[in-house]
Image (tube, rainbow, N blue to C red; front, side):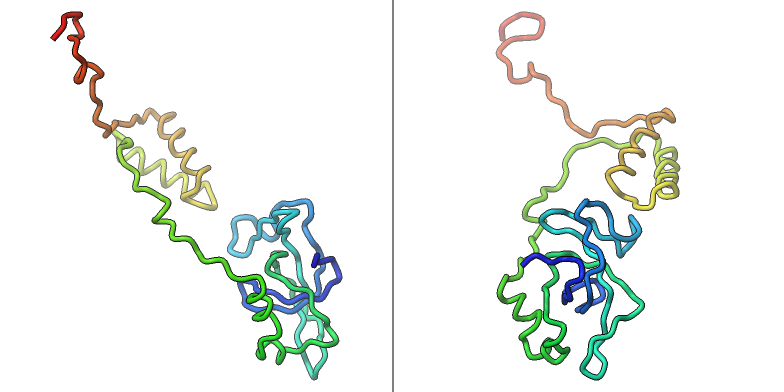
Length: 186
């Protein structure tokens, strides 16, 4: 069931189970919240847009809005009937637990099965210069390490005159050849 602005929803967030009214759905994509912060959400329309949800609390059997909004992903939310839903329903399994069981939970993959250890590569020939460039990257970028920051480190290190030495063992194409590189047969 598609969720629209103005719908009353329940869903999981970084703060736990939340009930509230959808104030905005980021159908255009982008970042909801402060980019690079712990609470930023990347909107992924149309499959899973980020939403801003006004948090509601149940008081005396009625849902009342709070002064707080929170980010929630569309796929983590479920539309519920505000008039016929209570916090007790969640505890009895007719709320989000039933929803989770109906769609199933994905298991977190074991990334060690997919990622092979890196072999070879190169080392900076001037570790002191490289360390100063890495420190500059940590001061310059909000997130380090990251693809952008690491790329900057390599470019800046080379711009400052740094070079890399290869750890890779090179083998001549002539090592297994039946011909001598000077043109004589073996």
